Length: 437
Image (cartoon, rainbow, N blue to C red; front, side, top):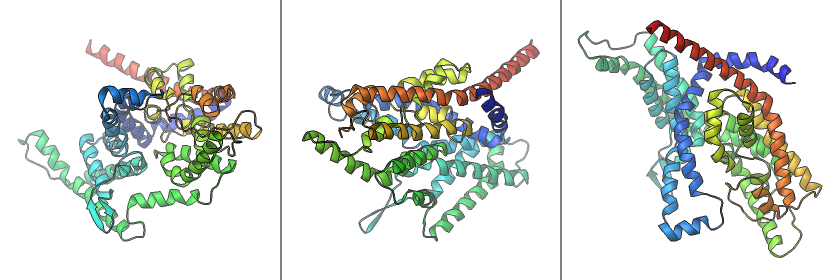
């Protein structure tokens, strides 16, 4: 099976790896990745899943202690869309032979042009920007904006729509004038795009994308097919660079909340637990290590991968991953717009949902008791706490192991691709060093 997958997917992986757009997306996310990696630890400290953790530090440092850590994690996670847009604009511009810094800046401005800048409070409109537009929900739109900005800029630059300065002018001044007309054209295009959207029922580009994503999420309920759809769509959206749960939760959260409260009420009064598909079921028995159930992926990265890039990323991502924070993997590997890893990334939460749903339906373990655990509670511990039974932990271990086998052939293909890239880079460095000698 491994050889068959390699035969089918390896040529695709090589072709995609050489594609300038996808390579630029990868490089752009890598620019943001160190920020995500560092701030993930601040997020973990502020939400460490130990009973009494918050109360203890509140008694020592005061009630605002969590805000200190939140300020650090928010500085990146709440602005990941705009940061990704800048990084991709820079990388794509550079890969197209242009001045990357100008493309990063013009991508940023284009992003802000399309960003809603008014909040309705009662009958008044307040000038403000909500971070929901700048964070993970804006990643997909940021990708489109960055690529389009570079192409418009390149269109003008290739036709020499520039202002040439005399030879004696400093290079920095000359380059800024070269960029003047191309940047003006980019801004003009996005200015017109904003006007066009404002004349439609969508009003903004964000609402346009949000409405399209909302359409398939209607008419859902408390059933296994419903929850399978929830996790399938959430995983698919992550692969497109959109924080999937923030979209799917807008439909499912009220359902899960009511079901969870029903179970909690029954648990408190020693009555039979009525529902399977509660919020703890979603959080603790469908995804391990974050969206895509990437804890299994991290295990494979450690166990079998030889690429330095993958192994180093695994070392840095393992601790946040144990506690369900997997943005370093999503944007560092990356998962976003990576069709090879997207396959198991979508399969595993869906498969876990089916297996867990059947296990609970067959009453192989108790239903979740409705106690809302912190989303950072690690697997095995969370399985026991959510069900009050060791069987919950066993189910989690089984599904994590299955995930290892599912992820294995796909990450091995990516591992070979990255190894080849690293080998070529080393050979190139050796040639440069030999020429210098």
